[in-house]
Length: 72
Image 1 (cartoon, rainbow, N blue to C red):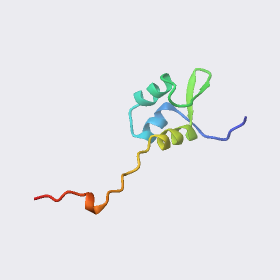
Image 2 (image 1 turned 180 degrees about the horizontal axis):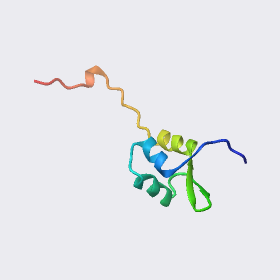
Image 3 (image 1 turned 90 degrees about the vertical axis):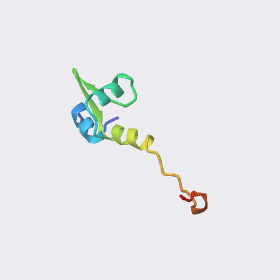
Image 4 (image 1 turned 180 degrees about the vertical axis):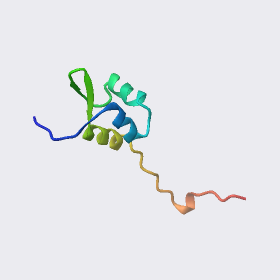
């Protein structure tokens, strides 16, 4: 299987997610995100980051106006 997906460094993934480098490293260590070993280097496919974010995205709850409480 050949993929043309861009491979990102841990630093690039951290910047993309707005976190420190420890977070993507922990995801890799716990095998919670797909990654590729290139020699001693670790790279994360861009689609794996997109899938990770999509799976953990929480949608807002639609609240009906009648269900809202009045304040004072």
